[in-house]
Image (cartoon, rainbow, N blue to C red; front, side):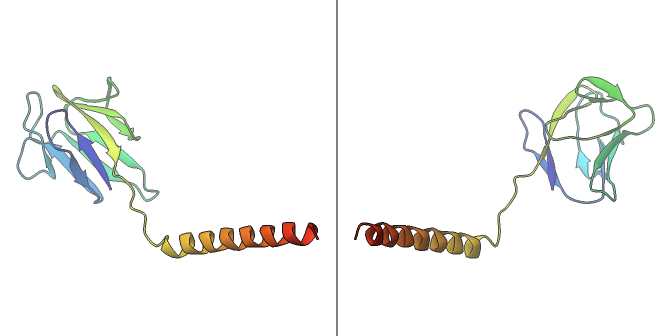
Length: 125
């Protein structure tokens, strides 16, 4: 999942295959700001998981301040649509299923500590 954050507004999270961006309410992400076209840009998720942003028609999309027709997005990229600039982020990861690993790690560390204490006591005899 990824999200765009525009200063002064909540971020827009999304995890589909295609996201359309523009002023029109039919877009996946509606950006009603000056200079944004009705259908301004699209983001596609490739088979390899990479996200590619592409401007539609003659709309101008900037990536880190450089105008682009099509580019691969990277974490932290600054993306401009008209007069609006947002920042691209991957959503925070969620850790799941680590409780068993954590328990086994602490158990192993405790057993190693007990073994070391027993070894020290045995060597002091």
